[in-house]
Image (cartoon, rainbow, N blue to C red; front, top):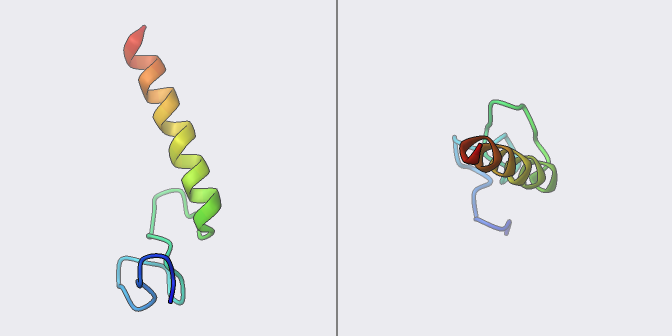
Length: 48
């Protein structure tokens, strides 16, 4: 069983628990890292 039990979810890449995303990242660890970086940049830009 994967982290979210999502191996057959049509919102995830086939055979994966990684959500289909605009960045095309299929590795869950890479996606989580990218999400953190985007969040930091968004917060920084909104505080300026």
